[in-house]
Length: 288
Image (tube, rainbow, N blue to C red; front, top):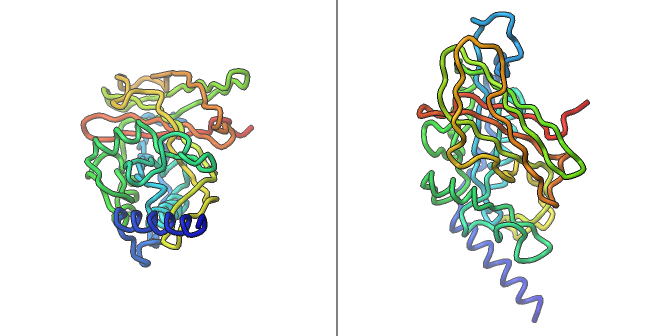
């Protein structure tokens, strides 16, 4: 009887996932990159020529769900695009699990074996963007919500775009109290007024994901949004034109007990009414 109940529950989860997920065709799972690029400096480290172009690092807010059977293929395709176009510090992916019908319970899952990856903050973003299903993405907060076949074009166009702000992030981890202090550094070619955001992500999280064939309890997730150190609208910042790289925002975040700093990253970005102007990423524990 218990076996029949488990099978029934698995089939019910599959049906729910198929009904609520956006379909991903086989041809869209791994998009070819015909013209990979190696864009220039975006971190502000190159200050030898103040008039040198500052290139954009792209922020991808990927919306996914553990009960979405089509989401793993979309995430894999996104990682292929990322690696082909400068890596995780140029194509900065944040995988946001949201949409209450596609996720386990917020926080620790209802079953203690499974960790739910959804967050209240992610639910706020999901609602703000008017999302109804996954997988979908918002890229640089321009162009609205994009379905998976449109991600590559938006990413490459973003990487080719020059911007007026250089940005970098530094982290310092205190093992004693499991806190990370983040300093966001910036400089601008023209006066910038907008908002700064600081998020934390984690890689290599192993927990449950639903596939069309049934649930997999040891699926590996990357780029998972963990928390925001800033309000949903960010914190106001101003960067004056022509100044040297300087600190524009600093904050300290205490890590949850289950988060592993060795697998975590800081994602910082600044935006205004035109979208994300610049983004930066660094490891919580940078390599020596």
